[in-house]
Image 1 (cartoon, rainbow, N blue to C red):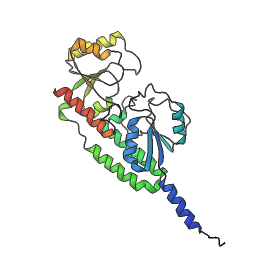
Image 2: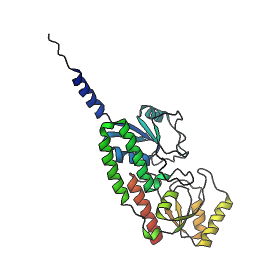
Image 3: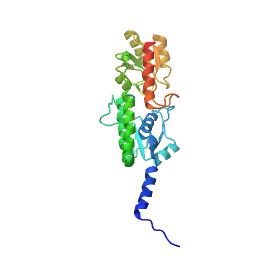
Image 4: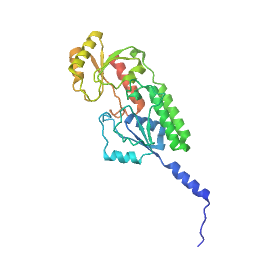
Length: 271
């Protein structure tokens, strides 16, 4: 029997082809990050979010199956600012925060993705790190990133919202309001997961009456009945904004999230 000899170059080509066909295993702490990863990574990544849209990242806790996903991943993209403190604090090099010196941060509020400019920076960080893991796909990631940037750049603040005043129940929308030039005069639930004092609720009611504030901003999380109480006393209109993808059926990607929230704000002040 004649033995066939394969030169080293053949093995190198076969090995490279196998390596290049393997998808990058990505884990994100929240659904919004996963949406942006999929925009930039396309069919070169397999991405899962630990927190689904239906869960509150402030009160989330890891399950054993989540730890297995983290261990098996190539990279973990985090939010930081205590949003995902429930992640293992092992100092792993594969854990990458989605903010840097170019990210606009307001009072250490972790909801920075709701500013489209910050969304672009998140995508840039994702692109750069995916390119480090799979340099042979760097051109692909760069192209997908540019498509994402072009789509984001089409989102403009509507003139009707500029200078409007609101009161918020949750401190989730500071970045969106900053982008839209909306003045959030007060956040009632200023500490996540902690019920505000009766005095703070009364202060909110008095402020709405004094400043003739038309709109209260809330989110689809438990608010201890605060919104209903304030509306009964003031007659203000309630606008429910969505902070995360996956909370509602038609909001499954980052750009549709931004467009939906802006549309709801417009409707709140027009109707």
